[in-house]
Amino acid sequence: MTSPQRELRLNTFQMAAPSHNWAGLWRHPRDNQADYTRLAYWTEMARTAERGLLDGIFVADVFGLYDVFGGDGDAALAAGAQAPQLDPTLAVSAMALVTEHIGFGITSSLTYDHPFAFARRFGTLDHLTGGRLGWNIVTGYLDSGARGMGAAAQRQHDERYDAAEDYLAALYQLWEGSWEDGAVLRDRAAGVFADPRKVHRVVHDGPYYRVDGRALTEPSPQRTPVLYQAGASGRGRVFAGRHAEASFLNGPTPQIAGQAVRALREAAQAAGRDPHDVLALLGATVIVAPTSAEARDLRDEYRRHLDPAGQLALVSGWTGIDLSQLGLDDELPFARSNAVQSTLENLTVQAARPARVRDLVDFSPAGARSAIFIGSPVEVADQIETWVEAADIDGFNLVRTVMPESLEAIVDLLVPELQNRGLFKTAYREGTLREKLFPGGGATLPASHPGACHRRRSG
Image (cartoon, rainbow, N blue to C red):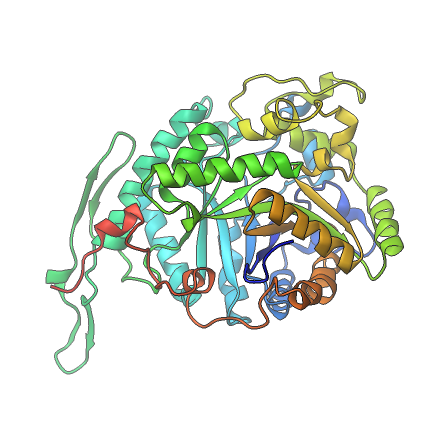
């Protein structure tokens, strides 16, 4: 089984919406996801996650409404399926205030946000969290979001990554190159807060974005937040190999997940980085209870509260296929779309057999799009070890089901079992999120990362 020296990374996977990956569970009598608009929802979650020594609260986001299913967004709205939604960045300061160590991986699409403003906002959050911020880089995949912003449709899949390359080039200059290390003086006697000679103008004239100005925030503890990336298409892997420090992957079997991890590590190596410079984090749904029977009873109880139309609205948005046109026993067809290419490939091309539509509305690997672990703490830990060994996984984004009990069960039942096996830490390390995730490294981007070459030092 897995070497005890390999310390897993675990995030709780959340979203600022009534339902995340499992539509309809907000209806469960013990669930509180409908309280997502209350600040206490987020602060209580953060306290619980830190009590379990989790590495981060990874908050998903999507810009737009899931309107592929049936040609409108009615099913998503009725089910609370990632709609309505809040801006996930705004709860971070409150969660940081009530915690000390846990990190925050915040999904934010770059497509409709200018890098000059984005650099200030995420630099601010890195300051206010004491260096505990990560950014999950996404480009968006819903045409509804593009139309809301006044465009006819989103950019084509691969062009979105071309734009992302340009965006990162501008951000690295703002975060790493505008302010020298010694620029901030805070010299009361001399009356000088910052040395203007050490704050440099950034001029970026790219194919998609233009910047001309000095960065508005002084360097934060990490300068550049920890860079996450979600996207396992061919073009997405190239982007991750260059930029990501952690990549969020899905895969309904260990074999499919393992292929994605190998491709990620090859992309990092092709970009001149160590293949293990990028953490491979797999999505996983966990239903854990004191006994196997209790866990399966919970699964059956949760199943009764799933919303089939809402679930299919989500999958239709992810794949770009209107599943309202198919029957429950129909197989999911493969068709190139402008949505999330890797999701459709995992469920059709790489699967032993294409998923049926009914598989997508149940607690199954196809429904989860990734691993699903159900059982006692020992059984779930065994399953995790098997997947880690088979797929070379560094950790998991643990998808919420019924809240808060799903997170509490992970903290109180699963974490102690993983600790007993030497697979999970028993205390937080000091330092920033980057220093916690990569022991022995520094607070800022390592020299091997392409963003580091933009950094100005004192003098």
